[in-house]
Image 1 (cartoon, rainbow, N blue to C red):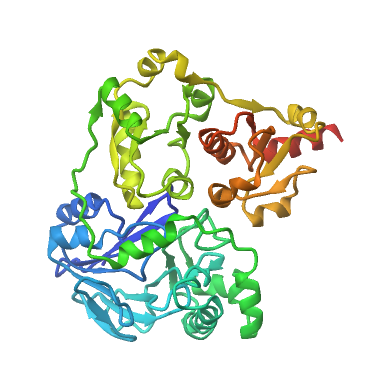
Image 2 (tube, one colour):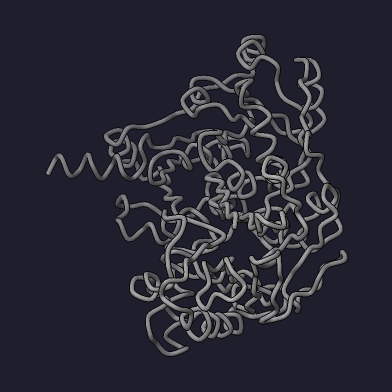
Length: 459
């Protein structure tokens, strides 16, 4: 058997290739949209991709099932209750799929979504204990999938939570301890609140260590699983809808064009938005007024979907060697209106000095001084679960995922100071406010962690 896990740090997303080396038949599970790596690996090892399985309609990224199907002719499988707009193979609970001796078995594990499935992988068809189980978003390492994401589209969070309780407690936890667990996401994903940095585990380890896998009543499970969930990024509904649709297919060799300075000016004048993916310190030292800072060294795709609209048109500013990767990250969440990129960021900015501004970034000590004024609006943009570590006195909580929709609650005429855990998200949030017309915006260098360390050393 050939078993490969592909992991994207920027989305905390895992996909899988499972193949029978004897027959050469392979299945890809939960593919991302840029599918060239799967095709390359299949070619290298003499494999034929015969099937594509999505464990559910993903909300945090655009699945590559249509791209893979176009390239390979493979069937597309979903849980039998799924109703996509395209032709698919309805996978029934307990159905077995033979790739040769390697055999996959479908488990209906609804709860994160109604159609969610898990996939048991048997290295040999007659093995009593499966090699592993691909749990999608039903079971993570250290957590379970959140049941509240579909509450606004016809299924309540409570209904899904009760489904999830049954899937986790009565199905997955009844598997043998030695079965390996391979989830669809890891730490950082907004699909849960307590995901581990580990990429795999076992049923036995999760039975012992996962808070949601401990014996408990259905009501207790609902309470502990739904409490403290981070605000879902705005693009989740957009992606879940696209993943059901017969949408446009992305070319495997897609690339965005380089734009002349004049073409950049024309695009921006016509309403396009400049997304500056340079390092946050470079952005702070000088950037085009109205640009949004989303550095490429962090969770760029998720952040793009959090603070921007998919209908917007974009021009990218980034180091030349990173431009195409940045555009690919946009495409991974279906933000396809990238017009091109700035050929020479430094030269472009030097030629437009009157349109360039600097960012205000405060040290932990400077925050103390700034907040002595009652006029300052101190905003904590971390997720709710992060507040347990503590907060800066006087701060108001407004998560980055809610900033765009709730900025009317802030006074644009008064100074605003933003902070997150380490300074990355606050730099993004500050740029969003400046682009919206806020005139006095600062963020905290090093975020809450720097402030807490400063206070610990002083005490």
